Structures are given as structure tokens and as C-alpha cells.
Length: 160
Image (cartoon, rainbow, N blue to C red; front, side, top):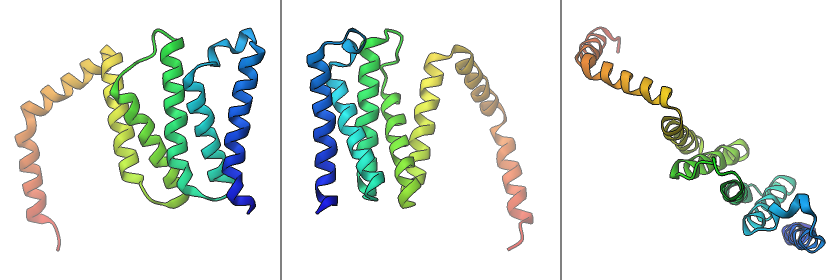
């Protein structure tokens, strides 16, 4: 019975704290009285419940809600924060990896999404990184036949 009510208790405590802090109208917490903060509260509640009760199915949605809450809050507070789809891929990739940590499922989708999101984000925000990628692609366009030759030689001499 205790495990059953634990998630509800965490959600009620988090939402209650959110509204209590909103009523107190503290100036240093004024930025947190927005709807992304509720996403963060729900995500933290799911994560705490998932880890404490060993209900690992809650880790994935908890991470996504917490990540989306942090992202939407940062977009509204920090003007230089990146608003691009690659951030969502990073959040989902992290959620897969945190779930993999406990369930041993979802490693490859997590790594692929995290790598893709970071790659796109870096290529957008860092011009030197983007220039290096373009040079690498130009080099690959020039020398891809060498790769075919090397792979063919490998297939000839590979032991079965």
C-alpha cells in the first residue's frame, strides 16, 4: 500500500511546494512561477519515485518531463539558449541512457539520439566545429574509393 501512494505523495508535495512558493512571492524565485516549473516538479516526482521504489518504468517519462521543464524554463529566462529540435533529441537520449542504467534496455537508441542531438547542436552553434565537419566531408568525398579498396583487401585476407 505504501508503494502505491508514494508517487501521488511526491506529486502532491511538489505541486504544493510550487503553489506555496508562488503565494509567498519571493523575488529570487519569481522566475520559477511558470508552467515549465510544473514540468520540472512532475519530472522530479517521477524520478524520485522511480529510483526509491525501484519502479524503473518511471525513469524515462520523469527524465523527459524534467528535461523539457528545464529547457522551456531556460528558453524563457536566457535569451541565448538554443531553441532547436536537437535539444529534444538530447533530452530523449539522456532519458534512454538513464533508463538503461537500471533496466539494461535502450542503450543504442540513447547513444544515437544523444550523439545526433549533440552533433547537430554543435554544428549549429560552433562555426569552427561546422567548418571542421565540412573539411572532413570534403576529404571523404575525395578519398572514398580508397576506403572501398581497403575494405576489399580486408575481405580477401580475412580468416573465416
